[in-house]
Length: 289
Ligand SMILES: [Zn+2]
Image (cartoon, rainbow, N blue to C red):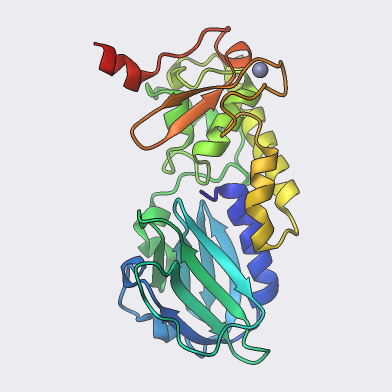
């Protein structure tokens, strides 16, 4: 799933290509991806793109008073095409294409929003104000906002009795951090994913705040200037523990371990994060009871 660094890079990539261009056609293919109907997607046609921004993990393409707000979800992606096919796209269960946007002028360039797999989560909204999208309205502060300081971070954690893993990826607490970067941030901070947010000392809060900023800035830096098609591979390369079960931790050499949940998993290094002790796999322990 694309998270803050990838969406940031995608937004920069699109900003360069879309700003000042006129949208010629918007063609929804997977109707289920379309979450709004008023104004219709076709209302974007003929409008000039003024800005492309990231809001948490959402992409916001602003075109003269309207916003095309996209959430790529788990398996969604954006593919830039220098020349889109002329024939209209055909809907079908096997077609990963969800929405096509063609620009006016040029060689018929534009982009496709695609989604692989059967679990459909990609969401497209056309709104007058991004805050009309519930997921955007709920967003907490952006960890890369220059105004987001240690005190703001401490205030978010204070009194939160949930585990750090859950808190960091809660979009209403922090905008843009998901499953992968929460693993990476916790590894960089040398903290257990199961640690309770409310239990952090001042020193630990500062360490986690540093790790959060450093990990995200580093990932944004590596993604900068990459084309949309290169971002996924770059993300994978930069991850130290996430998705690396069984491989050696790049910091200490211990084996990266995993805890599985119903629909996701987390990875961590026992030596770096949990005093060498493996975390209980809650799914497994439930089976053994
Ligand atoms: Zn380690």
